[in-house]
Amino acid sequence: MSSRRDMEERIKFIKRYVEWLKKTPNEVWSAQQAEFINALLENAKNFPLSKKEYLKIKERVKKARN
Image 1 (cartoon, helix red, strand yellow):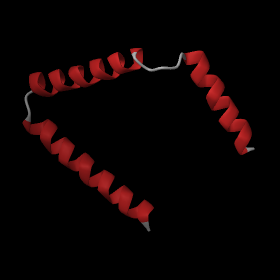
Image 2 (spheres, one colour):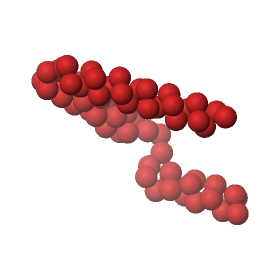
Image 3 (tube, rainbow, N blue to C red):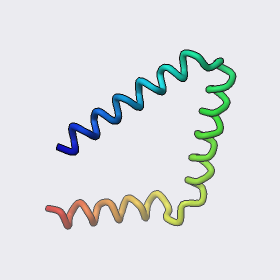
Image 4 (tube, one colour):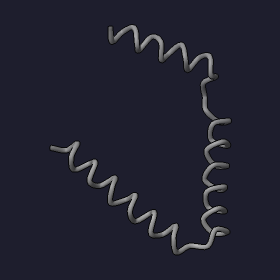
C-alpha cells in the first residue's frame, strides 16, 4: 500500500522536523521560514496566469470530471 508508506514517510519527516525545531534557535528557523514564504510570494507574482484565468481552468477541469 503506497498510501500507508506515504503516511509513514510524512510522519517520519514531521518527527525529524520537530526535532530540528527544538534544537534550532528561533532566529535561525524564523529566518528560513521568512525566506521560504518570500520566495513563494515572489514566485506567485511570476505565475503566467491571472487568478481569474486560473479559476476558469479549474472550473473547466471540474466540469470535465463530472
